[in-house]
Length: 204
Ligand code: GLN
Image (cartoon, rainbow, N blue to C red; front, side, top):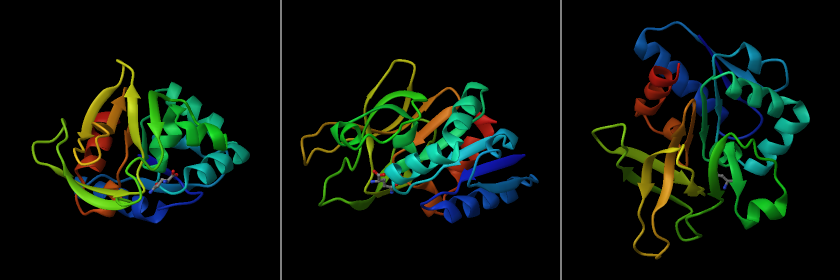
């Protein structure tokens, strides 16, 4: 099994470490490789788009010719996981800020995303998340996190974060559409490997 991590900017090494640890826990042999330019995506069985700065990652992926390859991989049914900035990039539509900056989106999930959705006071925080796929809450690490503000019926909502203190209503922070999964938070920054296992189990 070969898993590729888009290695342009952001928390690439943390994902690589988490994926290697997950493979080891499963007793599976596999390779985790960095994708920095075109010509690599096609050889991967699954791909992760890490957190970071979505404008930078999006632009450089386009320049490197990775964008089209990712679209082909998704169409071929390969599993894709996007975390934080990765969630933004997977979306089909962005908020005003995304539109204003003209950042390229992959458009692989029928969702609308909002960048930096939790406001300045809450730039970074941790919250135990109730996820439909697990019995016990998952430790959600949020760093200048986005959220999904609208999802089509074709999208499974895996977790929402209700926020009564700012009257913004519920925000979708984890979702899956067929072979594509998007998370607003960072599972690679915890020792909890359940999401990485889920990604490898259900999606491969
Ligand atoms: N705020 C970042 C963006 O909009 C995402 C933050 C992250 O990936 N930790 O790209």
